[in-house]
Length: 434
Image (cartoon, one colour):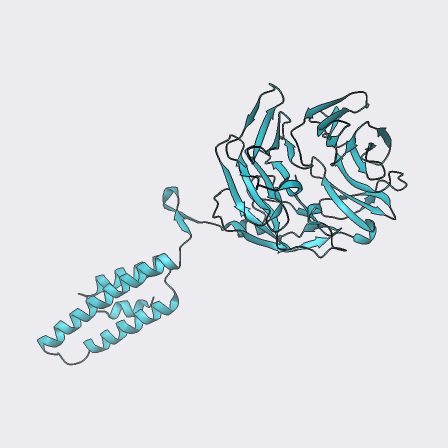
């Protein structure tokens, strides 16, 4: 503000003007408004230098000053609400700006690390500020990329693909650089997928060459072992929580369900015969609980069940999803069921096809089941539990899990990469770096 102007204002009017100027400086009023205020004060000052006016003129000037001060206070109040909407007073009288969810994600303050996506036979990673997906060196990873898998410690990314019908696994770090072929001369045939052991020392492989065979291989590609089973493997095998067996959705001569086979292949047992879909089950991060979707065709509902592997207790989580009558062979699928790292949330998709698949979030303590997205698939929760990523209409979106509701507004993250050729949407996969 102009100090010389303050010095020229009449003494009886100086206190009000000083307070107004001080308020403007404290509230950081825009310069344009300050200039307008000074202009009005100069007009008033010039009127003071004119010959003395009548009592009517004095009253008019007084009213004008009062209206000017009142208008200034109103405008300052409006500016304080509109210009500074995101400042909230903190303890001690200071104020800290509230950083929007999207900005926090872009800056890496939450949901840190890259998000990987498998789409249309290619694998990509988000760039540093999560504005675009960067496809990994496709020419070095085979003619067709099926999937990927983060190591348990998040330091390595395994890219699973095939070249001329022969399975390939390439390892890279979390930046997508330094690709290393760990199966240069494999005899496993066409690879469907692979999973890391819990200690990050081995892979279990699933090949379409023989759906009754699993392969174990060290993470550096050595020590390949082939195991023949008396079962049909219908989903990607994974290591059991205690790392002593292999678990998968499969079928024997009499039934299908969730099976476990010891690493030496000597013992096989049925864990659960209610699991119906290949990715409709998940173990909690500590391995103590198994959650799966049970379909009751008689009552026409689907319910999440939690099996406590330590006590043997099985409970149904509150909330159910309807199975449309007359579904027949097109009964809705439950897929991509997974836990958050803190075991607080469960997320999954449910529906018949890509357009009507909805994404749900359930609280593991049984308090609530929320439908988050009407049309989306491949949901994935970030390692810190604050972001939910999903695919919808060839784009990837995020939801803020710190403010969960059925009306939460999604944030656009990036367009899906084009990939090499069109693949079934069920092969789409999203996963944050652990």
